[in-house]
Amino acid sequence: MTTTRIALFCSIVLLLLPPGAAHAEGITVTGVGTEYFFAQRMTFRVSARSDADIKSATVVFRAGSGPERRGAATFAPGKTIEATFVQPLTGGVLPPFSTVMFWWELSDAAGRKATTPPQAVEYLDNRFTWQQVAESNVRVRYYAGDTAYARAALSAAQTALARVNQELQAPVPPHVEIYLYATLDDLQSALMLTGRDWQGGQARPDLGVVLLAIPPGQAALAQMKRDIPHELTHLLVFQATGAGYARVPRWLDEGLASANEELAQPAYQLALESAFREGRLIPLEILCAPFSADAAEAQLAYAQSQSVVQLIRNRHPDGIRKLLGAYTGGATCNGGVEQALGYTLGALDLTWRASLGPQGAWLALVNSVGAWVLLAVVVSVALLPLAFARRKPQVTSRR
Image 1: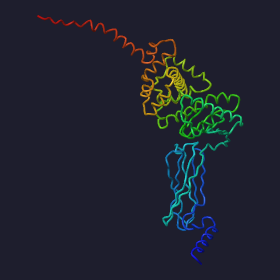
Image 2 (image 1 turned 90 degrees about the vertical axis):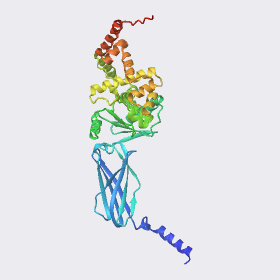
Image 3 (image 1 turned 30 degrees about the horizontal axis):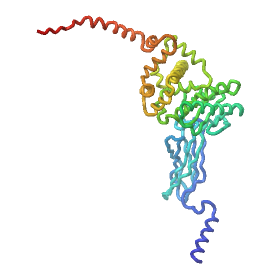
Image 4 (image 1 turned 180 degrees about the vertical axis):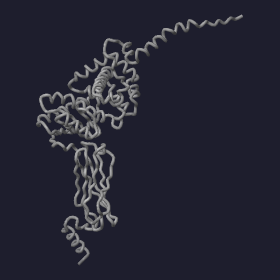
């Protein structure tokens, strides 16, 4: 048999062999899978065989663009294995509503290694059965209500993204996921299970995810027009600032989100007017940091932030983009205001307080720095002429 015929015969034999038989030696992965219980644990599984004992099996996983994590499975080495690794989901190791990528790395006693192709699992709140509607880069998931309810949310989201981005001119998020919980209790239980707080809505800008409690019914559309633009604003601010998002002051981020709500919240205005009358306004410097966990104080913080943002919009048409640009570049809370608007954070606070009513700039100053400080300044200025009057002029005589 000639060399050509031998090669042709071998090729035909290889083609006729069952898949994997041509590579009988080495590690063959026969199954890969995962399962999880929301906010409790995620289990990764792999089954494999080899002609030598398989000694190690390590799963590598990450959520979105987050850091890679590794977990070594515990099993009895052998030529055939069924290995598992259990990852607790408490403490935010894997953020809920993210896409988790994972793969296995195996090795046997002969020194051979195998790596499985990456696979994806959506880590959702699987206490509920989610349905979905989607269009372009927006997807709405829901487990209660009808298709019209979900499509109303989809329409509100697409309208809000276009409207809000006219001001911010941020890159469009590659994907937006909106989860509609049917009750506030359902949403709060999800947030508490994952270590989050009491909020009625939440955005995860790094994941492109928005969580909302909007009960189906006649009031749903009005709530959608408030809550959806609010949370999507956070996503767009993140798109505009990237790694600088952590430096954006809370008053600016939440003020923009509140100002972009399509329907006004009367409670904000009432809270602002009451605090103004009673001298309880929060210094703007304090609102650079995360807001208080107290619901009433947080409401006032939102109301003040919205009002400050409106003032900036009225007096500085391009001020919002300049502020975001400053914080993207690494500015501090006060430094960003100076760079973008040309005056200090304290001056912005004083100007805003003076704009709240007919009290004028002097009363705003009293509210801002305190009556005793202002009185000390006034007394000092009044005593200056007396100090100069005590000085005797020195006369130089020339002979």
